[in-house]
Image 1: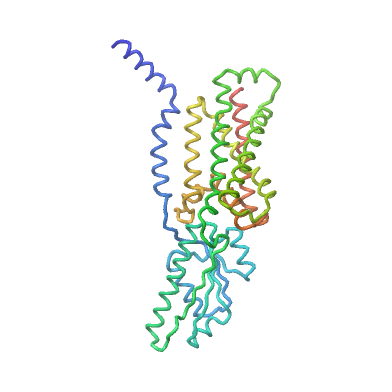
Image 2: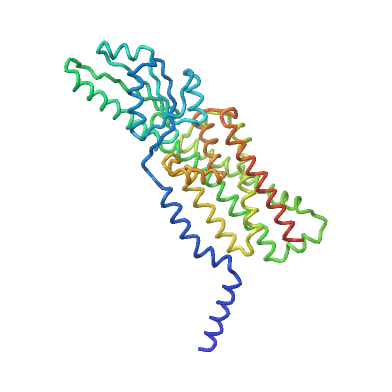
Length: 369
């Protein structure tokens, strides 16, 4: 009994010394439950929408008000032309576009069916399904209302013509495979690099490196470069599997995809190295990596559309590098767009890379000082 009490006392003292691990054990479940409980929503509302109204009539504004009042479409832009609307959907500024033809009002007044085109970004299947169903319902309800008010009307006044772009057949693999690629790279880069310095410290080899003329920045670069090569190998293998087995198209430039992926890999590595500098044991590094991985999966738009999340959760997703990379990889593979349409995402990843690696170097200098 005495030996059991001695071991128990030793474990309690160890837990007191390892306060960071103890705090994470208690805080992680609570924080994640609150965060993801608010974030995970499957009903997509407030879809950012642009309008190209060539009619500029009371009738077009009345139907547009019905779209806005549904709560599913947020009219955020007025397009100057069809090309302007196309660029907004390509770049991801909006997920849907509504086009009214010039003779929209005249056809309604003559009792004819007036067509309305609704363009939907189908690269995100959840958003597109919600937008398509709601647009058709609005057209049907508004038509029924007019028919009930005017007995002479025989044809449906509104013809809502929904055009899903990029993934018109709604194939799930087209949407999920590029995202899975980004999550796999995140998991590998963050978890493996988070162990790098901690492992050196636990084995006692870090002290051997410190007595050499190697500078902290050189040590960080030396740690990062092999993982960059590993990241590219992973991406290549994943792309081959996606194309050959799941027939996922690559409509854009493969070279551009590889070049822009570099910013994502370095950002993920910078995050892993920062964890490695903060953690004191490999267990702590693993727990911190796990804390990063769940938000990367649930808040980035990988599984649940970000448009359905509360605003504060939506902006928290902007603090995760993979959020921006999913827009890049889906844009190149499914939309065929290039760098010009993804400048905000590339800039964000570059900023992540510079800030995280710089903080890691400064933190490492402070550790060895």
